[in-house]
Image (tube, rainbow, N blue to C red):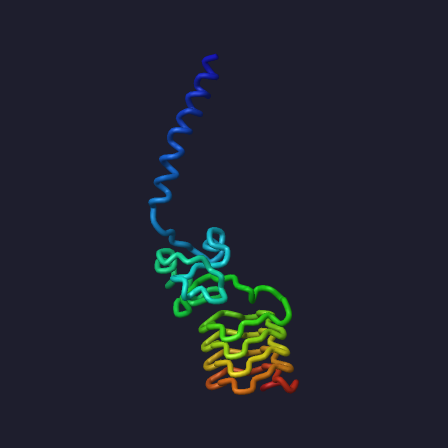
Length: 183
């Protein structure tokens, strides 16, 4: 009987303390994350600084978390400090053929090894993006801005690059739209 009172007393104590602890955690402010994997546990699609920045990312808008983590995590996965979202896990992670990202702003994205087969990236801004070893076969890049983009070892077989800006683009070891291998 004495033991059951202790157990009951502990349970009562926990019920009383628990709400206070939860309220305190909510008031703690934004959390600093060590990695995108950690951030994605709380924000599976990443974090955007405002609604205008969400675009194709579907990231959760949380300006405080974005500001606190943008410098340390802004270069990981998809999204950058400049794009307005970080640690985004957007539709590009799928392998759905023909995904449309017409006019998407993907400045500085890390898309290394991404499967973008037959994606419609017409007019997309990929300035400074990392597309090392990405599969862009049959992709539509008409009018896309690829200034300073790294396409080392990328597969561009059958891709449409009509009107694309390739200024400063690294195409070393890339398979070109006509099937030739760039030196």
